Image: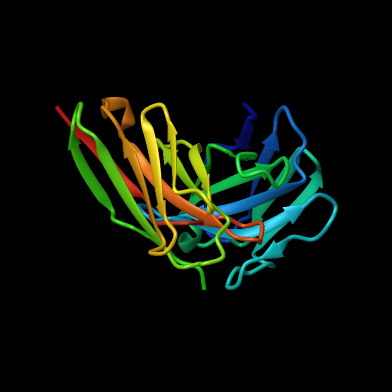
Length: 116
Length: 110
């Protein structure tokens, strides 16, 4: 099946710094990519939807100036957490969609961010 | 708004059937999904059902949908240790986004 990778798989950064997380579709082109955040023992919360070449659509309550999303190509989307704080520590998961078919959205393995 | 709810934990004996339940609120849901998440890993789509279906079976997995009660269940027959994971119920309506439940942690005891 289709593979989505994320890099890095885990990262530790200091408060106030920025960190970039990459999401790649390895063997397919993704028209749309999604970024989720998952707190321990909780569900996935959709942060934003991004389409290649256009601005991301953020969910209510998600600060777009803090979580910068760039969808530069059909195989790459990046999430940059700017001026990170400890409360940004979380598991960030991306997914990539090939089409609107229900079984054609594939999830990456996630990136664990710890802000100290 | 849309909401999807699940119980947090389920423990079953190896070889028994596991039944994970889910309720949702969005009456315009078109697809309902079950995803599996193993520790430290991403989500794996197990199965999905279209909202006009009542049941779907795929090997050891059986999905039942009661649209009137907005209730979805996943039955895993002959549960094995490899089935230990968190199972997420999810739904999508006409919009593109998938709404997830809180996940049910399934543990298997010998």
